[in-house]
Length: 57
Image (cartoon, rainbow, N blue to C red; front, side, top):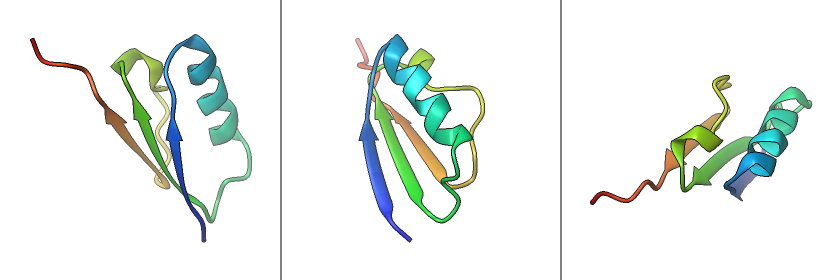
């Protein structure tokens, strides 16, 4: 099992994440860090952990 960190933001990042989730990523463990919550897809598989770094004002 591999542990993979993805740091992504923006519309292209959202499309990339959806594509990664659709692929056969069964044994890998993913941590996804994004600046904005809306970049993260609605579908959230078990082997993905999502973190949003939205600043507090």
